[in-house]
Image (cartoon, rainbow, N blue to C red; front, side, top):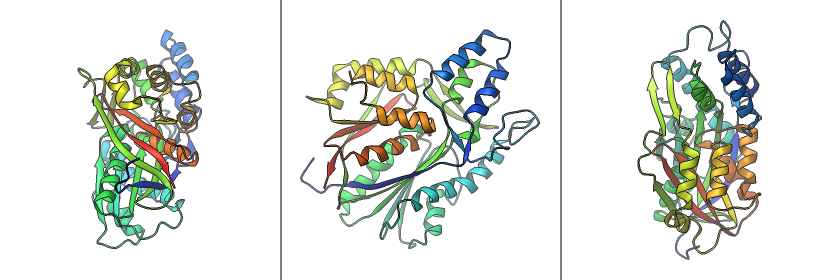
Length: 349
């Protein structure tokens, strides 16, 4: 890594809610497709998804996707009702992750990323007050960027530390994807909904101590891909479109010499921290970069245990990567655009 002023992730902690709704969702989706050929297709793809658990801030009764029961009973809840839950639960889940960091010292800046809700005062301000931080703490809120927002948050923390060497930056991601279930009877949106769950993560970024040193940023946007991943605010929550073309487009982009050279250079790095957006996404990255069968083990483990938690997912992967103290590595995430965002990293003692 560069000898100039560096920024390091000193610690990462994560948190998920208590309610595992994965099996409830599968049963609900199969009922929507009952009697049609797509029901068998959905069951087969769900079994092959690599996901065994997803977690929701809703309690077990409210998370029921059945008519007449829970939060999604009969009429779909309005966006206002969903945002009311976000305003209450997002700060709580974020604070749970922060608490697991232990003593973090005097925080000078907070960078919060979240794309599954809106509230003002923002989650950043609520967290600062609940932690009893000084009113002079500088705050940045990264919103609605989707799955690669953690990259933006961490790169922002890097810029802060490199410009203010004494800064101690608290980076937080919190996503409540389960608040945005939609009542569909078509297989494509049901499969997209089968990917997402809730989770939060927190990290401390400073210019000292051991940790993952944050290096050069990586960005790329695919041509003619703006409609492949979209996220719209509707009257009944946020509506996501996730095209089945996404994995193939990612694989093809990674196979191009220009993109591959930017990521790998002369030799593949020791570690890859890749956003666990889905099994097909991870398979596409593995194929596009010609990685070994164990290169994405951390990403696949996060996908298995938590599903896709939007911006928080990469932080969960980095938490595991941090424990390995890798010599060098690359973090990558994919989201609306269709865009790739990432950065290089390497262990620094």
